[in-house]
Image (cartoon, rainbow, N blue to C red; front, side, top):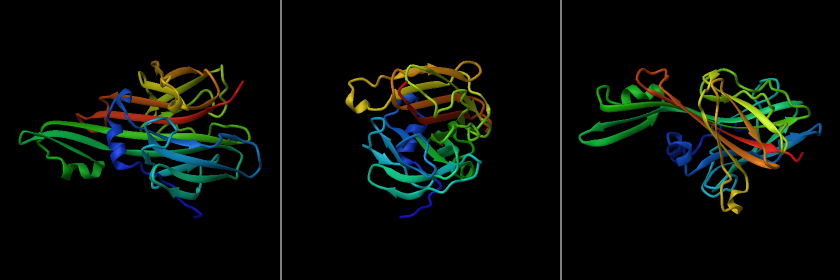
Length: 273
């Protein structure tokens, strides 16, 4: 099938279970995995897998739904993907890199989560900001509200990498890297910066996990925290694909009295030195 899926939607059940839990408690992690991240040919194609899984990059739980994917090309314009397909455990699609430079592939989801007490029972609701007023009682007892945003991303480059696709403003937790994500080598150290709604995400919790965890007895997980300007450094122990998950919480939601929760998950390829 030729085509045209510009948006990926995470399965509602898996997304709901993951959005509001601490990273360390997540049973399932979402990811978009490119077959390669740097290509030199003039008419390069890349195949991607997208899934939510127990083991990083092993398709064992649910596919990413092909409704909410956005691809930005080097010139900032939206790019059409090809051969989109959703199976039992994964979705796949192809991308033709017709221009030189870096492409951002992302799936973004935002909304509100609320819980309250009603007739002695705990009620929970999740939906859009527009639906909130009609779905949640205005005077609900013990009402707790969280504005959430979740971003899954990866990046591929044809020719020389550039940074025009990286988001430095907007909503949610975003990556504004000093080190280009398609210029990573084993033994070297990358410096990344995370922003929350365009401002430094100080104190964000970040997990780094190498691929292939199905074949290890341990996750080999590294946990880091961003500094007051949103920066952190990662030293790559070896070549391969890595999953990075960042989580940020504070009380600066746009809705009065609500919490703000944002997460970012990215796939990065580290090449041999």
